[in-house]
Image 1 (cartoon, rainbow, N blue to C red):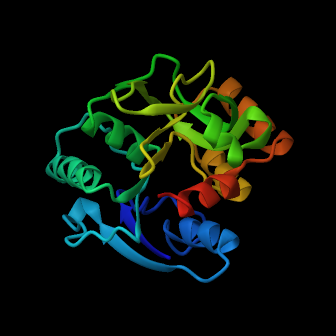
Image 2: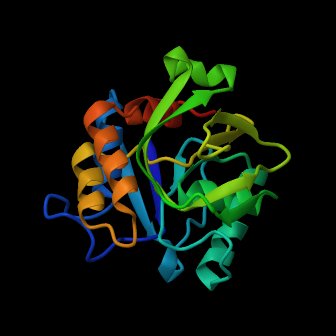
Length: 232
């Protein structure tokens, strides 16, 4: 499968030494669940790069970012238009964290800075969409998280995947072609720990809970990746 990565932040200067670039996390994730090797096309969205021709047999993934989905920067506005166009054409599209939030906002939902503060570490949420249990068995979805914005209102045509006390909308689908996660399926324990070690303005209590969650729980990123690759 060809996977088009719409990179919304390269996180330059914040990556650990064991990563050559942020997209490497996605390469490693998808390659770990692919029967045949995937091919990748990168787009630097902040520099105005977006796919021109959209293919129904390819996957388009919108990554995380330090930006907010409610911001009015030109590149974010362009990405909103891209999302609406891809949705009209029923192109297979995935949103991760910021991507999840921006897809929700572009299609009529609402995103806000959460008064609950940072959500980080591994979080477990309850699966509420029956077809999600094909991938998240046992009625539970566990993913790595690192966010303080949340989708507080889903688009009218969206269906919630999972929910938790911390975040009502942990993910959603629109039809069979859009799949979004607030969490980060691409994160590894080592990368998540690196984020905790370099975190600023996060309380010691939050950091300890996040650290304990990484030691205690296993994230289900591969299960999420299998669903992404089976969209449609």
